[in-house]
Length: 362
Image (cartoon, helix red, strand yellow):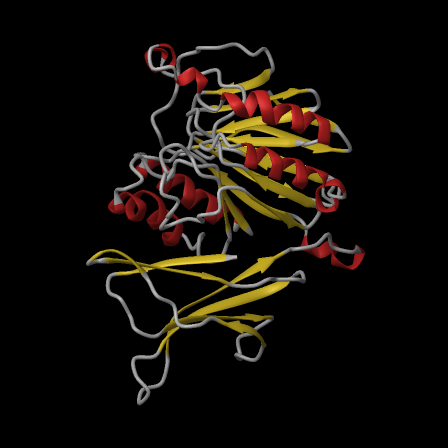
């Protein structure tokens, strides 16, 4: 797992260490300590630290702490300490108490600080999630360091979301780094992991590269994916976009963005039994089903809403032109999906399990 934090000055001796089952008395199992970490210096006031911690091999509570030692004569100082839960394997029957595992999902909060702040506050106060999913476009301008602080990390850290809930992140077109530095997020373009009985596959819709296709085939063919109760894909640009700005859609050829996701990835989703595809990019909410796959667009976390219809794929059953966030509850035999608007009202809800979709709101 990647831990990212920023300081306004570069410190000489900074490390991170992590524990399993560390109670309040401080006694726990020390799992690892990093080497001294060198920051990525973006300018005089932005020094970004990154560290890989783990692997986490059992369902348990974990804690990490960032430590600084100014010199050999002074004791080390704990700069920050946070705990979280992790669920790397399908639990056995004795672990049923871990359910539900809660995931709060956002996307496309760019330039919508007021809205995103309200959504993040609601998500924290109502749900206390185990994970955060972000489907991309956290900022409008990737190179704007202030936007990363004010528009993305401030709302998450103010409500203790990003410190205690690992973030599942898919790169969007506004936070795509052509140099693959990715100061504030993972530089890995596509990756996969397991949460309990679900297998997650995160793709990069910015990169039209056959290497991603080949990796996806290997991942979908793997035992981890085949044996999962649910197979979930996250990709920023949806395969089936219906709402956009007509001028950009037609005159700037933005209708072709992510076309390879639809023409190359969707057939693989069908062949290998993907259950759910989550995207952002389009600034509203839609849900539909095609070839037994649920497609959900959740791009309403703050950006200006897309209100004009430019395509009709005839597969969406729910469309809500409003800002929102999603709560996913993972259970042993089902996923419950609930969508909340800015006022806290439920605007969509469905359950999926055993290949059946039960919708209570349309």
